[in-house]
Length: 361
Image (spheres, rainbow, N blue to C red):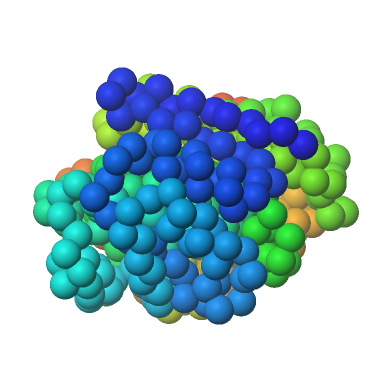
């Protein structure tokens, strides 16, 4: 299986997303070339991954052989690293170790590690370069691409962040070999999202293979298809002034459910529930084809994702929708899917949205 390279065309901020079962030397070579000549490189690693994966240390060694002053910082595992306190610790560590404006960061981990690293790079010394090596399916198809970086605060998920594009994204499919089934399923939620909003053929491919472990060649192709959906949208609307909001399909309710669970639910699991809620709302509003809700529910369930929204739709979840970052004044830009491969964005008054979601579920 060769390397698939997808260009993200953003003028001076353009970069490549490389997808392949690559070795450490190849990954480091591409990252080093993209970073140019940094004065030093800090590699931020998901702490749990760093302990469990035998692929991390060879990658660090390969970076050290090609880049100057390579030092490793382990982050709290998963969503726990996405806090303001965590960002402060990272920035303090960078300053204490003498990293200047010519330095660069590299993320090795899942979506939370990518978000943390990108946000730290965006604000440290008013902005330095970074690159990502996503190691989970969710990070490969979503979090590592597009330059949206953020951390959570008590009021809600991803409410503090910045747009800051990476210099390169290198997705080594080999990391997926040891990824727990639950994490694979969570990543597939974002692939289903991409299919529903922009790629009807991808939806059919997923339905054809959902009952079995995806062969490596099929998995690589669905990852590529999902990344291409995101890249097309980001290239057209980098800073989410319009069309890019469609990538938030399932996320308005999903983020609220995720935060209300105390992040016990994985992001993809919450997005699965959020997509069901959005499809149900679309049917109730006469926008979504009625059969699509059942079709999506069946697919998500076959992929091992939760689809029973009703027990999760608590008063706390509904209240958390009020701090959704897509809210403008008293309305929320809510993404609906009329039919496979098509998305629309409607401004829905907040109280009406909460009432309609409750009624639809």
